[in-house]
Amino acid sequence: MSFEDPMIKPKYFIDSGKEAKLLRSKLGMNQSEFWSRISVTQSGGSRYESGRDLPKPVQVLLHLAYAPEKQALALMKYLRQD
Image (tube, rainbow, N blue to C red; front, side, top):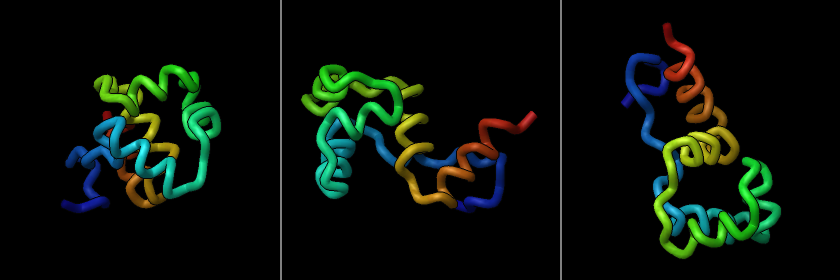
């Protein structure tokens, strides 16, 4: 998959609450710190980490906030195409 082609939808960096929890742990952040970056409450983040499905808008925000810059920019290009 090319990160340069805006026609190809990039795979989301985080697909599940379990993946979010692993990343949060790797970053050494508590739930409030991690989830507040995307305006999700600590209790909401806890529910996602416990197995509730991540809505697509939350996946997008997590991608933009935490994916490596090249991947985040690829999603922005995809979302902004006409």
